[in-house]
Every structure is written in C-alpha cells, then in structure tokens.
Amino acid sequence: MVTPQGFPCVALLLQGGGALGAYQGGVYEALAAARVMPNWVVGISIGAINAALIAGNPPERRVAQLHAFWETVTERPISNLTRALFGDTPPKAGNILHQAMDRWGAAQALVTGAPGFFEPRFPPPFAQIPGSEGATSFYDTSKLKATLESLVDFDRINSGEMRFSVGAVNVRTGNFTYFDSETDRIRAEHILASGALPPGFPAVEIDGEYYWDGGLVSNTPLQWLVEARKRRDTLAFQVDLWSARGELPRDLTEVAVRQKEIQFSSRTRASTDHLKHLQNIRGALSVLLRDVPPEACQTEEGRMLREFADRKVYNVVQLIYRSPSYEADSKDYNFSRRSMVEHWQTGLADAQLALSHPEIFQRPPGDVHFQAFDFHHTQDIPPRAPTDQGEV
Image 1: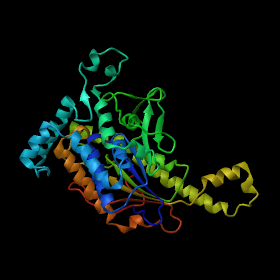
Image 2 (image 1 turned 180 degrees about the horizontal axis):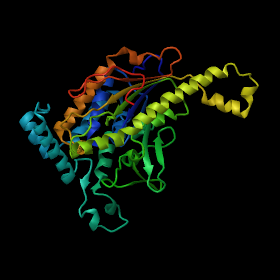
Image 3 (image 1 turned 45 degrees about the horizontal axis):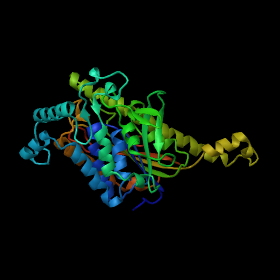
Image 4 (image 1 turned 90 degrees about the horizontal axis):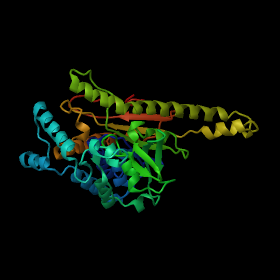
C-alpha cells in the first residue's frame, strides 16, 4: 500500500447514481494500478455498494470483486445480444442508435430488474396488504443481500484496516445518519439501507429503525469528511456521478436529465464551498491563537476555540462523470452490459488523467488549507484547467 507523502488520510468518496456507479469501479481500478490506496472509504447508495466491495476485500482482489458485481447485475438477455453483435467494447454509433440501445436497456431493467440486485414484485404493491414491505416498493432487493454476502467480507470491513462509512435516512425521523465502522458493527443491511431509494426499493430495518437511501438528503459524502472529529491532512478523491455543470435543455428529455443532475449534485457544490470556508477559518484562528495569552486559552471559550482551530490541509480531487449527449434521464437505471462497460472505461480514463498530474499529491502552499482539482476529457465538454474551487 502506498500513502501519498504528507497525507496520512487518503479518502475515497463515492456518490450515489444507480447504474452510473460502474464509473466508480473504473476510477478505483486506476487508483489501484497507481498503488494509491485509500484508508477511508465513504459511500452513499450505489457508492455504498462499491465502498463495501473495496473495504470488504484485500487489495489484490478488490478490482476483481468490483468487476464480479457489475458483471452480475448486467448479465441479461439484452447484454448477450449486444455482445454478440458488438462485443464488450461499446460500439462507435451515432446518437440515435446509442439512445435506442440505452432506452431498451433501461426498459428491460424496469420490467425484469437486474440479476443479483433487484426484481419486480408480484403481485405489485397496489395489490398487497398495506403495512407490508411489498406494499411500499415496486422491487424486492433481497437478492442484493445475498450478492453482497458472497462478494464482501464483513469481518474485514469491521477489522479497522480501513475506515468505512455509509449514509442513510431514518424514515421515521427524517434524520440523516452515517453508519461508521469506528462506531458501528457493519452488516449487509447497512449497505442495503444506504441504497433503499423509494418507491423503487423498500426501507431496511436496522436495530428497530427503518432507513431509506441517503441521497434523499445528501448525495455527496464530502460532508462526513468535513465533520470528522479526528481531523488529518487529507487527500480525497471525490467520485461524483452527477455533474453540476450542464447545457440549457432543448426538450423535455433533456429537462429530465438536467433536473436529475442538479438535484443529485447540488450538495457537492455546497459541501465543497463549506469545506474550503471552514478550513480557512480554522487556519486563520490557529494563527490568531498564537498571540492569545496562555491564561485566556484555559477558559471554556478558549478551549473551545483551540479545539476548533487547526492547520490541517485538504486536497480534493474531483472525478465527475459527465454524460455524453445521447444519454437520457434513464441513465441511472440502464443496467445493460454495454452501458456498464462504457461507464467503467470512462472512469478509468478520467482517473488516469487526474493521477498523471503530480500537483494533486503536493500539499497546498503557504497558508492555503484547501485545494480542489478537476481534470477531465469528454467528447462534449472541452478540458478545463484545475481551479481552487473545483466544480462549484
């Protein structure tokens, strides 16, 4: 394992986004190849599943287990047909063909589900007894629990080798909650809870309370990193599946796409701004406290300020999936093999590009406490240089 010099904490932050989560698998493959190994992984929704596959396996098996999961959930008749026609490499087709294939893949997921992940309820929820699990969701996710338990070693997650956190929402109170391996005994139920997006998936019971997908409140786990009590100099790879930036929609399909992107990426902008502002205040306060008389620091107010102040630094490398123009609003539930391979390859290429920039491993200069980097290349959006604010 390699820890980038000067950053005792290397965090991997994985956003929710359904089928787009294959992009995160490609990102991790690039990190593993470069021997940049996280010691803290945080996930929400599909990001929680990928996080469990990473934290719940030894380093040499993580990429293989990520592949195993994504190949399992995209193994369907349409996948076999498209592979027979085009192979596993996505075809270089025009937008119309791409759109047709994507819509067909998404339609099949709606009708038949995804193997080892979810399947439609029969009878449907409208025909089931009110109060039963079947009456509150369209799909049954019990197969996902079995899939996770076959691919993830939960004893390893709970061993303390890597810190592990997943976010979910308490259905009864509406409070956002993180389940963390430092304070909780992580089970498959915690992962299912983080990805239980209603009304598709049922709430998951944990210790007498029921939880839904964390993305209902915050789809970006950067907030948990910001609020950590044990602050350390941190290099964070923030892998987002929804881009805050986009073009003005031209029709209702593009309106639906843009609505989802804004809805699920907005917390990224807020959290990044908050982290930068917070670290600047902490750093400035640390400098000011040098000139405060020692007796003043022994007061309750002084101790509170000293606890808040520090000079920890953060480098946040933003890896953001940016949809090609042919992807529609169904992209997050298009569990076709062709689409999965395309997302994975995009994540791999984006992460390789970011890792080729040595500045991401360098501590911020002088009194700077926060840096954000955003490197990318797509066919639709020209590359941008890194900024001190990232995509905000």
